[in-house]
Length: 312
Image 1 (tube, rainbow, N blue to C red):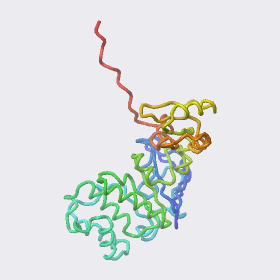
Image 2 (cartoon, helix red, strand yellow):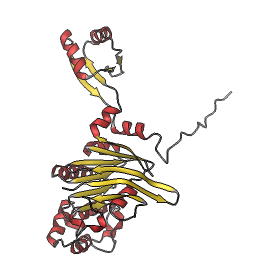
Image 3 (cartoon, one colour):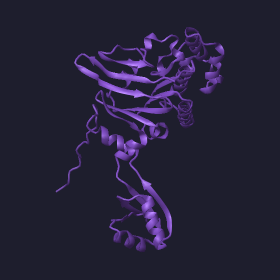
Image 4 (cartoon, helix red, strand yellow):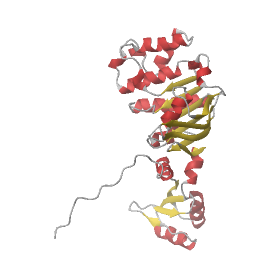
């Protein structure tokens, strides 16, 4: 299988550095989440990888070759960058057939990807009648058309209903299990956390992180355990004796900073304190991402001052 290799990649638009000396690799066998604030350079980087734009410096290659040099590229790389790009007057089937013919792909494969994308019943309908979610499914079908080693998807969940979101999530995981290289750009942190194994995070065109998902979460949060018991007083006294400072929430659960669930469970078991619930708490991907990119967002909201005035 093939990797995507980005080396010292730079793209200038006038004086603006959309991509700034970027180096990373996307490896086979895992789903890589491609994250960053608006304006971070994600879409520009994907365009440079696909030869849709020329770099100012550096390189972006597919298995060591520029995309433009690939023969029958749909068999090597499947990509969805813009679901609105398909011609509205064509039918879904004819749109895919045109792509297939240009890359030596048979008509049977068109029917297979229409079915896989859930569009088998509407293959003869014109694309202009499609909802955003249906166009998104068609774009994913086009990306899968050549049974490629590499799949690149920009915001693939955009416009999909809950069933479609589950479908694309499971599809990406399956492609990775098959040993393919999967790069997925998304703004939906909770969704990304459900499918990504590895993260590449950009900020202002520069690389902020290139790290396994779990390692990233671990690095951005301190240990914290959550526990619930029928003997709160005994548990609190035990934890206090052991040097912890437990805090109890309105729901009766205790939170212990600086502790792991296994440690708290062992202490409670040794004292015969019954445990109803015990879990480790960890920063969500959204919290960890916002912490990392707080100073790298080109467009950020600023709280508006309150307009309410206290009456004298």
